[in-house]
Amino acid sequence: MATASLSRLCIHTVTTKPLALPAAVSAYRHAGIAGITVWREALAALGVKESARILADSGLKVVSLCRGGFFPAPAKSDRQKALDDNRLAIDEARAIGAPLLVLVCGAVPGIPLPDARRHIADGIAAVLPHAAKLGVKLAVEPLHPMYADTRSAICTLAQANDIIEKLHSPLVGVTIDVYHLWWDDQLEAQIARAGRAKSIFSYHVCDWRSPTRDLLLDRALMGEGCIPLRQIRSWVENAGFDGMIEVEIFSTEFWRLNQLEFLERVKSAYLEHA
Ligand code: ZN
Image 1 (cartoon, rainbow, N blue to C red):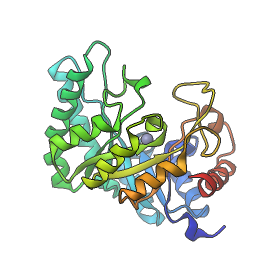
Image 2: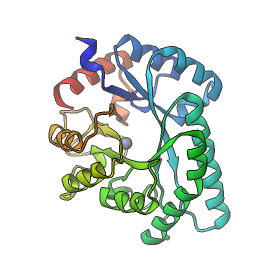
Image 3: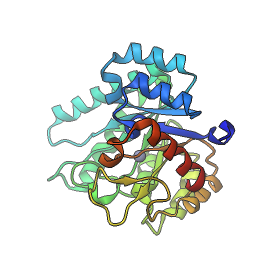
């Protein structure tokens, strides 16, 4: 398998969650994968400094850090804590050489979604100066509406585009994740809109298994579900995106497998279907 054809493939550490960061880095390198997106949990075992050294020595392109966000909270003191944590995440992104922090923006049962969206916009605005100082970009990732209770009041790309339009900063853009957005009849138009704003910062792929057995931990490999991956990729690329294609799969089924063998399946699925 030619390495060149994998030059835009990036894997999220959570995709191979059983591998600790050094093992993941080594596995991705040996598999000829070009990029890595690091989940904050993966930094915990060795700490940020040592993790940063391993990543710097790896030759892998660090694409982003996942994830900041979770801005809404009923109490102001809790919203302040969220800001502190996001500033820390920005510090971590900078430390590991990630140019981008992805935001899962948050939601809280009982907070009306429009209010939660205001908390989110205010939260991003509050941490933006710190991101600017450190040269880290921020990407709003809309999540599927089934997560609107506790994970994200931003459920569509239109809502994400609205927020970043208001924030009006070249440092704030969107992450397009096919798992969350494939069903939306406005997707093509909203991708084009984000493209015109030069705000498509990252692109996440996997597939939607049908029937889905678990609403969080049953993402499928590309080609094993019903998402029109090539069509969405063509929209994203027509909108000007030429960055890495990031495989982000949470799956209790796949986490049970030998992760090196699973990585080969990810590569094949990426080449055939993504
Ligand atoms: Zn994602």
